[in-house]
Image (tube, rainbow, N blue to C red):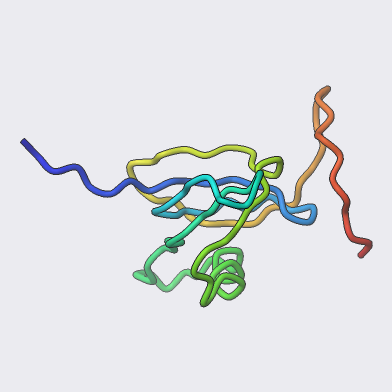
Length: 108
């Protein structure tokens, strides 16, 4: 019998007009109503010379963060993955026939 490794979750959520795709080891429902707690963020190891600026921005933004509370209506998708990919931030674009739930956006 083999011991199963701790799962890694890919969490995709909306934040101020951007789509955050991050990896974490712990995800659970918060005691704060309608929030999800995301803990133990995982970022890629620096084993190559190529540096992804999007991942570096996320590392800097979440440096020192122990736990993040994400509103459930901002969650796009959560997957349990076998191996970690690259964390990234992309601009949220509306495409298709489905209108997203309206969220307040700060003026730029």
